[in-house]
Image 1 (spheres, rainbow, N blue to C red):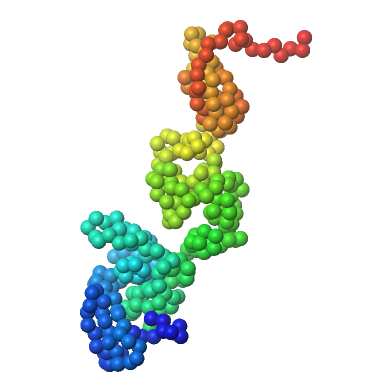
Image 2 (image 1 turned 180 degrees about the vertical axis):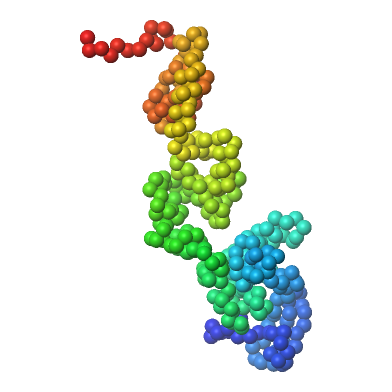
Length: 327
């Protein structure tokens, strides 16, 4: 731990050469170390064998230390319960397990201690192990306490989001939109601002998006959802945003197919005088169009993403085409 001068000093070691002048007793889940010096008693946490066991990023291969979420050589000590977790996502998985004792969410900003999985040393958080000098990961954030040793992964810390994001950095491949409070790719030239749009939950799975590790998909209207949820939405034959009902993307090809279907299926004579009052959900304008069971095309933007308000019967004379001659 850190002493009064800020230097890291050894409190207790299983090596008898380093703890010959100290006596230890177990008390309330802690190991109380009584020393001969003037520093007073030190309390060392006791961990289970499962907590102390190393975990691996590559599973059964056992070549890369870490967890399924991150490659790293250390574990985080929960700031509230004192348990060891390889990452905060591992803590969330344990919280969802009904057979395990429920723990509080791991506050990444409050983490103060980490556990080296190479030399089994509990120490203040840092980039290198104070005992074996192992570098825990290629990327280390002292604010989020994120450690990632992925060989090709690019990560940066956004000071406005106050979390680490995937990418090379602000001004390189991303910028921060203050109104959206989100990092936006510099290549996104059709960005639509929506106030605090990542602070809400995904409209499909209702999970948080601001701290999500899943890729996000921005829609044409500006709303955002998880990429996996977007794929599921498309597989369900839905092409409108679940929030604002605008088209998910450019639907010109689909609308051209609808035009062809309308031309090939003329309405019966009984419906030739039937008109529909519609509201277009893409351009937010209203109008009156001939009724057709295939679809109702907006007269303003040509979209079939419309909602029928009512049907009216019109006199046959009013359905004649207007005279465009100059005479």
